[in-house]
Image (tube, rainbow, N blue to C red; front, side):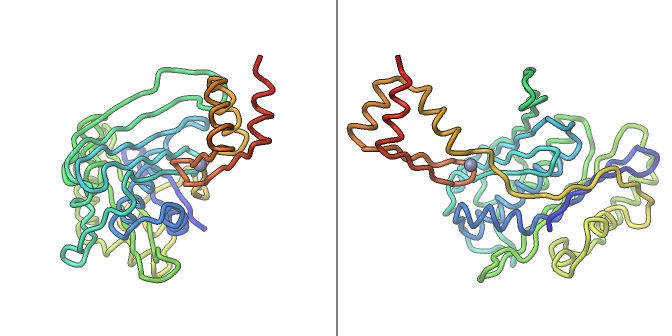
Length: 295
Ligand SMILES: [Zn+2]
């Protein structure tokens, strides 16, 4: 079972979060049938969004958007504080040869921008203007780009490690996960130095997950022997809020002439959710039922 935890260290001057997302990333790449490099890019982005969303309040959600000029075209991941995440890449077939034995995620992503959108009180009926931040991509490798975003757009010096380990048979994802450390105002130099040194010497994240590490063990990869306190632990899963009901209400909101055209020309409607690739099919009877509600 995938998990995410969030905690603090050094009297609250260090925030730390870690996640194991192996099954979540498997579900995402299976749904979108992504090529290996696109799978690694999507898996890293989903995990990054989950880590960023872990500090949100209960009904808030966060969307991480990458718009870029590489073969992948762009990536979107949306996560909430409950550990739910969904997302997609614009071109699932984007793939490149490995570079020094690693996925060339920077190559498929290319140059572009990273956007973070935070929405408050989503789904509980009040609306506030979403918070939006952005920064240019510095490598397209996702983890570095998120760390750069946090440092420049939110003034939070951070370290971000994200990893996806794939294999050529099912399950395609052997291990996936991430660790994020955020340095808050008042952190002392010695603590920062210790964290930097620990991360430099840390073994490969996905190997550690593959060997059965827990989310707490992942925090040790960044904090070493520094004491930390866990504030929250949650299960993580790929989850989409699309449904047949939502598709019906979406079609019901269209112009009557458009629905009539669907009925006449297509004898039904086929709607695919971009986030999870689920397809909903409506037959003639369904469309006639929708039409009967028009004045
Ligand atoms: Zn969906």
